[in-house]
Amino acid sequence: MAVIIKTALMLVVSNLFMTFAWYAHLKDLNHKPWFIAALVSWGIAFFEYLVQVPANRIGYTELRLDQLKIMQEAITLIVFIPFAVLYMRQPMRLDYLWASLCICGAVYFMFRGHPAPMAPPAP
Image: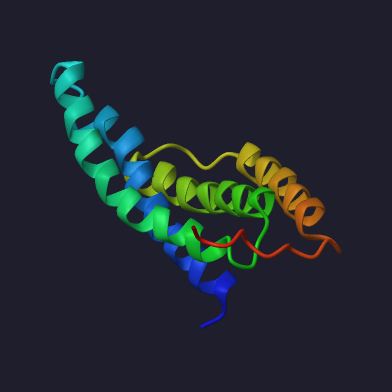
């Protein structure tokens, strides 16, 4: 599997965990003290890091750091919009389209014609 595809798929999975860690407590643990929500969120985020760290290490073998970052931002928006609408029951807003177009522009500028350097050798 191509590095960029493998990295993207792993970042989608990690973003699913992180989106739930960051926002699901607003719906599911709203009646609990904030520190309970924080502990639950940290537990969810642990699984996010189990996928995100290897994804970034794999991606960094062929992508630059800035390319990894903007890929993650684009994936975050792709994951967040369905989460907000379907899970959190937020209304679909036209602003999601405008934000997505801005991110697409950022992706274009980060990936246009600049070859990615090789990652530094492991110690």
